[in-house]
Length: 277
Image (cartoon, rainbow, N blue to C red):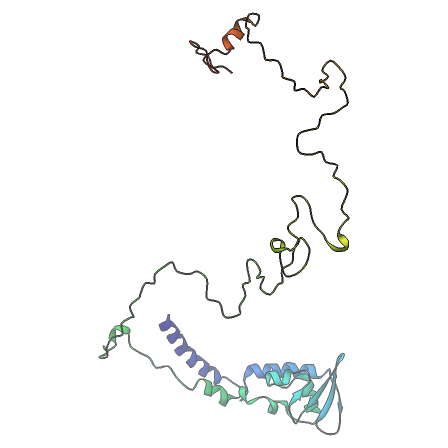
């Protein structure tokens, strides 16, 4: 690749020097083309002279200020390109001056030839180069670093991360229980609220209500109101023991006899192959 670049630059320098010999005058043809276009535009400008070196040039809806002595124009094109703009050309024609003499020296033939004054000399093929007698340079030994190689670059001091979660450095914490600054709900002096409730002090808090209407979580108290119907519970405070289920299988049928418990306890009866459900 470097060899191709060297050959291309060697050819280009010769071509650009030959192009300079085709110039009609000592000014670059590109600069002359821009000057001709600006001269045509200057015909539409109207000027006002201050009897010195300053001019007010009206070009359409805009008014520009030109100073011939300092070679500046308020449009900025004259200072940027080094070629008189339409407003400057109108002022120079009013003073009967040739605008070609106010073109920057960077467009002259002499300056152009200095750019391509040096040539690239031809060289032989790489295989024909003489061998060097100096000590050959050996590449340094590559030392394998322990551990997995890092994927993230080292950040500069004070650089913040642009992705992920934002840093909470410098942010004062607040409590979700009492809404005060300086602590969280774990270290709140009022204690954590009960499960399913919220504590909001200050004007947002409500007065404590009376006895809770929720039924007690312990065993239910006996009611003095009698129940109606044949399934009414006894009103006596004596403990009622439910009657034991009958264990007889006389009138239960053959299926009940098969599924009836035996002295061996719950499970399959002796000699049965069917699982009791």
